Amino acid sequence: MATKEFPLTPQPVSPIETAHRRIATAIPVPESIPTLTRLRELEPRSMGGQPPILWHHGEGATICDPYGNRWIDFSSGVLVTACGHGHPEIVGAIRGMAGQGMYHAYCFPTQIRLKLIEAIQAVLPPPLARVFLLTTGSEAVECCIKLARTRGMALGGPRKSVLVTFSHAFHGRTLGAQLAGGIPALKTWIGDLDPRFVQVPFPDGFRQKDVSFAVFEQRLTELGVAPKDVCGVMSETFQGCNATLMPAEYAQALRRWCDAHGAVLIFDEVQAAFGRAGKWFGFQHLGVTPDLAACGKGISGGMPLAAVVGTEELMNLYGPGEMTSTHSANPICAAAALANLQVIHKHGLVDHAARIGPLLAEGVAAVARAAKGRIGAWNAVGLVAALQYTRPGTADPDPEPAWEFVRRAYERGVMLFAPVGVGGCAVKICPPLVIQEDMLREGLGVLEQIAAEII
Ligand SMILES: Cc1ncc(COP(=O)(O)O)c(C=O)c1O
Image (tube, rainbow, N blue to C red):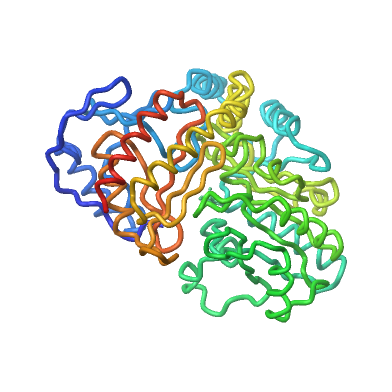
């Protein structure tokens, strides 16, 4: 994630006025500096690092500041606003529930909770059957870890508690999620690591060239992990840092391996689910169904809501009152999430992402070509792409040009979040699923120009 700040000194930029973008001031906008400075003074430094643009409102796949500037949004916040910003049906659902006077219900039953659960359940492939609503992606991931370990230890005793995850994986920032993550730099604060969390190479075809499943088994042997001690294996369906799907053959071999050794297969679908990858769930690209999936981000239309979906057996491991969360199914968030799913259905946004995805893939290939070797890897699936700046001829991350790329993009009316991934070298492109072809082409054209400049 971001490790530095973009400068707060306003730069004069050439005015831009197109059908979708408008930049009419210096950037950052001089009038915004007091607010941006005050945030830097009062919050932990960790809250910084994003483009110094004051977000005010949005419309569809564009985002606006209070000063008349407008950006094509290639961030969706952080892969959240699937239906775009300010969608009238989501706004209406939030207003409606607020007007009903129901802001919070803990685990007391509500109609909206049932409606949302039914809507999620309706798109689950069997044997996924039950839905548990939570608030954040990290919380959903932690819940999956807990269920896998609970089941493992019930079946095989205390030793059957090893969770296998993947190098470069990101699963969130809470303790369990970071133990499961595959980025060593994020774990230094933990001190002694729990030996029951182990990582194997993710078959991305770039940093891990051998994408065969043999590598998985071989690495477990090297780590001294007996398959019978593994309670679960968890992976992002596509890795956030590189937008690369787990290869289908690998995933199918992993499914068989989990079945053979009594391990739970978990996909972290916090980024992938609800259309982002051009399917309802990213794992539908892989020809396998996990036992548990953690969902978040695009599930809710922007409100804080997450979910674990799972099999009957796993989801019933805990009894009444034993697995809960204060804001589970918050009624306003649930109303927004239900409207979000209805909009996705009504406007065929999953198919739209699948249809328009190849345009994004071609666009990022053109951006990479324009960068003349500075971008070592690029991938796209559905409406998410990642471009990794690397030192020429190597897989070593090169974050400087990635930061410069993002800075030039927001100065020219294309909103990206700060570089992420290995060494902070990856520029992500992830517009709202409602984006139309002309806007996608316009934004990609700007990025191609920028890539050609940074060589
Ligand atoms: C794949 C993945 N899992 C989990 C998380 C954590 O979600 P949250 O930030 O909502 O806790 C993220 C967040 O970026 C993510 O990308």
